[in-house]
Image (tube, rainbow, N blue to C red; front, side, top):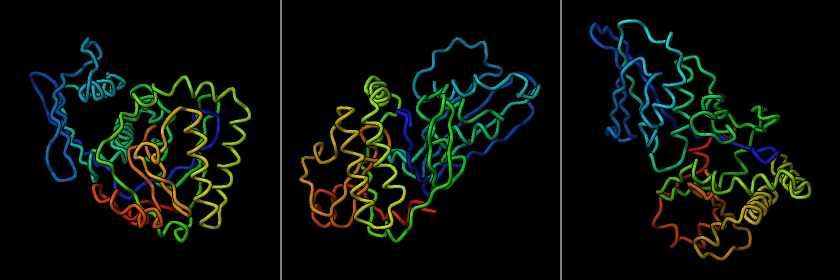
Length: 289
């Protein structure tokens, strides 16, 4: 990804909807933005005056994210004497880390005609792999070349992942903050050819794996290499859990982990640890092909 090697990424089956209504407005033009969670409960309601390119309002919090997005839209996009209402609705828990930001960026870019990757960089930063997933909706190999996002098709045999589970930890990582925390280390990795070669070899092994042991060992090795390079704890270290033979426990999501990927061997051995979290079947939630 941002460290000069390929990333393997897969989308989930649930996403985010965005509905837009345009209506006549004689006196003043405005945009009303409502956000609804997966249970149908509203969690955000914001109003913006149009046009807003001259707004000096500071971009802070959730409203700041929306304001940053809206400021990228050309003034010519907004119809004269018209106001808008946008309603977004998630199909997954906000705390899951499954892509509320990336699906929001993708939907908004489709509506306004903006470039989703450029919008992502302007608002959130990061590599843009999650935007590519939201745009394509299929597993992919993602890499950056001269700061340009590239991707190619990939698939993961469901037979290899039939004993995998997602563990939602109930606390979403702040992607921007977590990226800033490891930014210096990522830059050092870019100049470490030996480490980059190791990561590439592991990535290639995972990408071409036809057997479960090879696939899971590759994922554990990838996590161990990045953990040492970035100075981050593995989930074993974070939760004080002993690795087990034939087990798999890997961070997924932002640096530091929004959720865990575990296999059945790990789940059986650590049933007590997993009791406090929501655990779902990988194949029921993730698009492998």
